[in-house]
Image: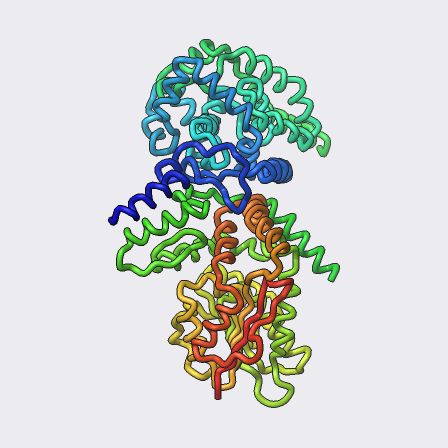
Length: 283
Length: 310
């Protein structure tokens, strides 16, 4: 390449971001939708303030109207976690030795990394076996989690992804089922434990519960969620991959968590009692 | 009009309840101008002799484009109308009505028209054509063939055809095919060739224009309704910000799919401007009388017309 062209290329690389520096963190300068900065990780979409607010409001409304839209709940989490809450969560991870190891190793929970066949063979009452049994009971798989796209800092994006993937472990630990009532109970627990705004906003879904369910929520599950969530250690710092063979009750004791009354059983008993009552009425 | 609005509102409401599809993570796409230029230069070196084209702001090989566009439309097929309504605030209906009315399909005497609607999967234009021919011109023999490359869009169209009054009349046919090469359509057989909001997705627009020239009979009309470039600078600034900011967001909220709508707005950006596209139509052999295009809504959409010489 002639010398003059080499100089031009050098000048260009100084005045415009090169592809290698594109992978550094985007500057927090103002940008518009027409000229987004380069992504910080695969799938990253840098959003402007207005876009992020609109996404927060839109996803809140959509997920309230249809709680089965898991992608909307995920988007709400990402849109509201910045700039303060996700940074706080990441700092709590950095403050713990296990948290630091997780941030260094960056383990992911997918059906490939968590082989369900292996988990089912683990001893009874182990964390891994409880997790696999819970997945089978509820009919879900670890692959249903969306990838984080709207969090700008790459490490914070991993923290969000980790929180999302561990959600099923929290279900297994507490025994709460996947229907709306169980999810709300778990979100209250997560709010007390992680402080992410999305978990608090999800509690608005209480207005959609039936009166009896709402009663149960206020009398039993919310008090349980807040006392246990605040009292236990940060769940984000648990290295689940290393705890698979621990006895689940030992883990609960270590974390300071008491499981709440089994929601599925409670509802089933109530349904049976209602059926019996209506049968008695007709006969 | 009000019942239509209610039906439209109801579908929007219903679509908020659809269970969203899980989207896989896309590879890195640089969206800032300089990075996308640099990446496209790198891609050119990688692909070497293979022909390249654009997919929105990405640069990919031609072979990949068809597959990627296919994935976009399979993903949007079921919520296509709701999305169109939300993106254009319902104005796309007015554009399509005007498009069909200005073509005035159907003859008041004798033989009906043979119309080919390409990339017309869900049948928006086809149904309007049949309605206009039947009701305005009293023509019950005009028939429309809908061709689309995407089986999901075509299936959606067939579903609607069954529910319409043209279900068993033999006036509506569906063909799975690529506009760039349709060997099943004989040459000089079509009176009117229409393509509405489809041609910007074609891998090779010139090949599609040449194929349109082939199937049209001498004197036949080529009509294309497509997004185009806005003439006013101020309006364009607002319009672009709506396109790149609001539309992918609406796609994400309603359809659970940000990436397909990001592709759609990028493909609009990449489509040639009015004069350039008019020249491409002329190059394919068509006669383009007068200005050759009609801007709608300040240039957001444009109707291009050409006639195959006798």
